[in-house]
Amino acid sequence: MMFADQILQGILLGAYYALIACGLSFLFGVMRIINLAHGSIAVLSAYLVWSIAQQFGISPFLGLLAAVPIMAAAGYLLQRTIFERSLRSGPLTPLLSTFGLAVILDNSMFQRFGADTRSLAPAIGDLSFAGWSGPGGIEVGQLAVLTLVVAVALLGALQLFLSYTPLGRAIRACAEDPETAELVGIDARNVYAAATAIALVTVAIAGTFLAMRSTFDPYAGPKQLIFAFEAVVIGGTGSLWGTLIGGIVLGVAQNLGSQISPQGFLIGGHVVFLLALAARFVLAGRDWRGFLPARKRAPA
Amino acid sequence: MNGSQAVAVRRWSPLSLAAAGSLIALLVVLAFGPAYLGSYLTDRLTTLFIYVILAAMWNALAGYGGLVSVGQQAFFGLGAYVAIRLSYAGVEVYLALLLAPLVVALFAFPLASFALRLRGGEFAIGMWVLAELAHLLVNLDGLVQGETGISLIALSAFAPGARRSYDYWLAFGTMALFVGIGFWLLRSRTGAAIQAIRDNEEAAASVGVRVFATKRLIFVLAAAGCAAAGSLTLSTLVTFQPKTYFSVQWTAYMLFMTLVGGLGTFEGPIIGAVLFFLVETIFGGSGVWYLIGLGASALLFSLFVPRGIWGTLSDRFGIQLMPVGYRLR
Image 1: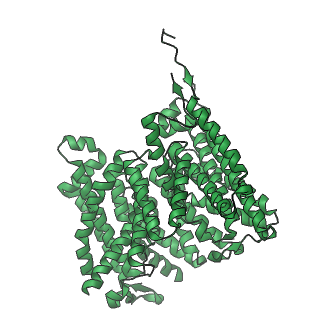
Image 2 (image 1 turned 45 degrees about the vertical axis):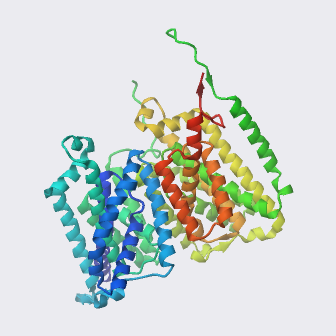
Image 3 (image 1 turned 120 degrees about the vertical axis):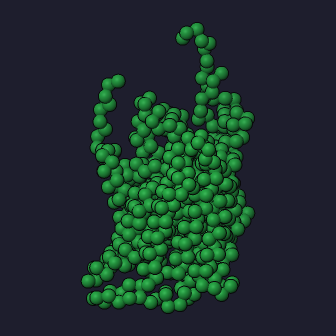
């Protein structure tokens, strides 16, 4: 029963990872950009919602509502100022520039908010600890279930948006082939900016859940980036539902790992990530370069 | 030759001869550093040498191999850890510090088969995950006592003054070795192969470049260099706290030095390391604004000055101090 409980809790934890991975996966799918500041932006939005909730004494959910347009605007600016120029200068530049951005964000948040950990848990009352009891002493937290519901709803909404709305179609067209999309009258610049805005809205939602379910501090970003990235890779890059599955696999692996040793939580997640990569290489049907003797090159 | 005019290919120019001559003179002067520098400057220059190693190795990987890694702290930390392990296993302490990078290189060799199959951003974060995993696994070792860490006690057998000189010479020699290997590689066939791979992997393979073996060479070299820097840092700090050594901060430093100096140039990272060293010395190497400044410089340089200070100067004036390229006349 203990085992079943761990798996169930792992699934619920995985829903949070899917939530935080959603924006990373989306941006990679659309622009082939891996945003190394992704985790730091999630923590930034956690601070934003926390500040709004504190300042006006309102519920974090209302705070999130106020943060959404701010993060969308930030996304638009991010594309226009950093991503666009980075993408023009080659495949490595986005990595260099977004890593620089992450260093700026992490340390700026430290400058502004100090080393104290913060949490939105006190602001949501009972929701932070209330749960439902199941058979065999299994406890399911209400917040964890809400996270799962929101993750599924968000991924579903994104999927529907991409499939059925004009902007969604334009985003898919630009993801396939921006030059051809421009030929048929799509402004790829605007489409990319809109996509980044959408991605940052999902990050704002993820950041709020991060703040509600645990504590956070200015340097919590890199860890969130790594979890999000692991979920994306395990689930298969560029697939939104794959990201949900990836998040769940990661969460379950971490929870089972924590049963073995206190460090096992993180080790379990990293090991599953590496195994998923190895499995992908094997499934890709290529030989293990380096381990096997190189095949003789066919005479030209 | 179809009647075309003979074109002379030159590697050396009067400028590069003069520069190489001055560099050798500078190295000779530096080699006797502890004799005239005083304790503060000896310590500071030791740190500078470690920075030059880190910058040159990150540049070899990213600037020449086209592989941006956010996880080189894995090798930095492992270099220090292996030195600790060897020393506590009874190996003479300075021998342990020297052997550590070789052990890490042996470990990096098979790892390359895995890591080099990752592309672009996947390689970047994949290496970061490997660094995190290495950190966690090192923490599991009872000897290290988790984040409490451990000291390289065997060093206390040496007088502080002697240790300062040893550290200086170790760092100086290691820097000369790795930068020298870099210079030699770039001038060799491998140098041309590496840059061909960075610019277009398929095209390089099509003209017979052994893509994987060449990339693995760079990967292992960079791993050994970062491990040497880690082992040298341990030698100067004496204490090993996993958190400090496996920190992603080291990658931020490497990125700053390489980007500001000039990614993909031979001289750039050295200039970047000297700049970083000066900035750190002036601003005390601490404080949040200092780190924000490093991040902002990396961001701005990557966007607006992608060739860095040296790359831009060298492109504009056609100068190259070290003869790693070819000139047609």
